[in-house]
Length: 610
Image (cartoon, rainbow, N blue to C red; front, side, top):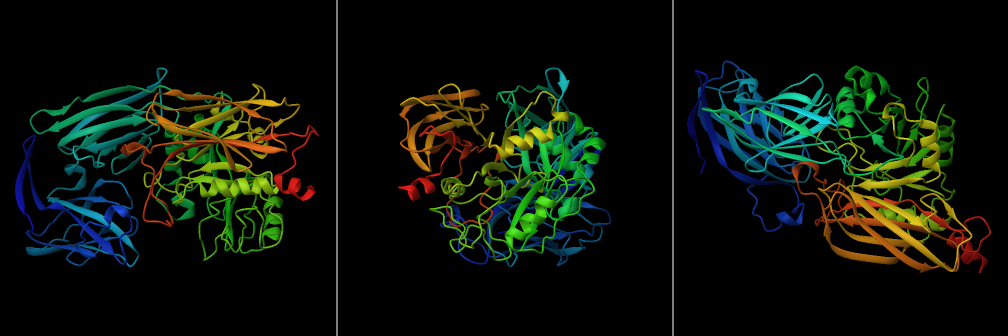
């Protein structure tokens, strides 16, 4: 039964009328079976929601509040059969404040519909109410001022606001440089005035993986305003990344890629707010200028933007960087990889070529499908040898149902003999649907001045695999207190000392550390989750020197972050209805020169010689 409750909101002498159309949450499904295991035993109420209600004609803008969760594709919102917007594209639990244009409602009976798409999607939607005020006024019941600093200086940050039900809450923000979406606000200058509807809220403030997260509580009531009305937050760095630069090698904007929703200036603000120091601008088949929006927003003091290009072909996507400002994009219509590789490497300035999301399907083509790639041997079944420099093993906007599959593919490439660097990236085109820099790569490089990173040195270390892969954890490896990632470890004794160090902020945890040798688990430790900030776990193993050359990597993982400020998204192209996310930290290889000949011989060639 539809619930319809009228109530008055009185504030500073102004009276607003609100109508609760429906207090329930509804499970809707468009096409197919349950999208995820969590929905298998949950009854569905159809592929659309229709609510009839009485109203007056709105002669000015009114506001519709809708709570939603798990929205992956477009669901139109239609008062009286006319689409005014769509549900906000986000898997998050959030409250969407929607503008109802003047004249959209009629005197008498009205119908509000939320219409299911043709695509498969399970969503929850409900707790729907209307206020007879414009959106700006409906969100302005109380306000608080936020100032965020690091070491006494104003700091970019991400602010996440949830209501008493745990849903991301809509807010209006006054700030010089901000990117605002439901419940998520990035502040480029660390300061802003937040306007909220009445209610109780939790406010999280952080700056990405390396930093602490502050938790504050705010109440807005018509008789007392906002308590507290001023919040000062001092962020702490909790992860030691000295001599490593935080890079996101796969970054998009709506401005140039035409998907997602982040403008180029919003992207600059979000990059600073997540602590990315070396972002690679990789919009599709275009070389854009990432420097100007960074300067226009003042964010250029926090990172060094790099021109790149996601060469988006019918047979895979590749990121290339750096690209000279006057360069044109390579011919993306080429599907022959050797010819395409020649074109990409001929682009002025290019030093690094990365194969993106190799298990994703685009244009009916999957680079590492079983018909194209032997996942056991690392062989290219399409004929020519691979010649890319790196491959995405973690892409936080395009995660795999089996989060280890890309790691296994990468290790097969190393076994075959390819010197391919594993990278982490976000592939993020949005402000809040995905989190820019959630997947990232730490590249060995001087990081003391993030505004002037040595791009050539960073690229050199990308190619030498002097890089760490991160999505919530940072894993480091040391052999005999001498060799680290990318090194050739030679002149070794019969017993090798391996030290794994796992770091992270206090809001992530590690509970498993694995040492791999030539793609096989050599050592493994499991333990209760450790949440402490900084160094969470240090493990020392003594192993016999391998009989043949080997590559060693560390992969650490832990339980997912469930807090709304760093939710791990569900797989972009799932192969299972179950989802068991993990935070991840991994190293690139240390190459073991077991036979002492001063070079690394891959397992494939060792087997051939035997």
